[in-house]
Length: 282
Image 1: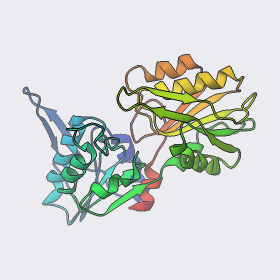
Image 2 (image 1 turned 180 degrees about the vertical axis):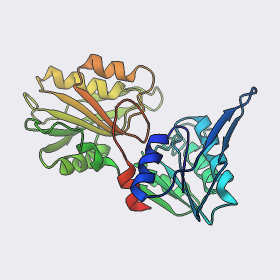
Image 3 (image 1 turned 90 degrees about the horizontal axis):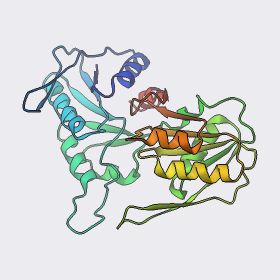
């Protein structure tokens, strides 16, 4: 039975359809003191698949409650984390800081038999879990909403680390080249600088591909650089369209043609579901 978190209802419904499994009724409540309650009043079957993005601290609490709510009624509890919050805090950047990804992974591990995480920002985050861990790649799905008429497409990663993801989207699309920007981050100030790639972009359509767009600052700076070089259309394709604060406005002001994401974080830009990729690994 598929057990949805409040922030992953669309993905959970798509996954239930893909697996032909029932969708559990779930109720959510917030008490006057701010405490949360996630309730699963009905459950049937031997396996509970809890599907919950942890895109906020409240969502982390909700996930732990959902795991506990089905623990004594299911023979197996599987946890699917479409987007793992705190996943980028995978090490101590300054003395005295926690390794937040490890803390969250340990807490999640106590209530489940195995866990699947869609495109974790840091692949090594799986080592923090005390249970079997599977990384699910939903990047190929991002080719689906792209226009069929891309002109000499260039799939461009915002940094070298995302080049593999850009290549995956390119391969799924079936045409184009790949390259990347050079991105440097100052971990003391948090400032990020982006330098253009050497790939020719004049008149070409570019797809900026990344695992997550959070504040949109780096991505919008990249778009501005591309327009300075007379690029054709610029599209953004990301697995996790977090788009916090005014990120979508930044991208629009920079001149993006469209933004496409999956439903790991449910936004208006969630043009395609990660459910098929998750279903394959379940």
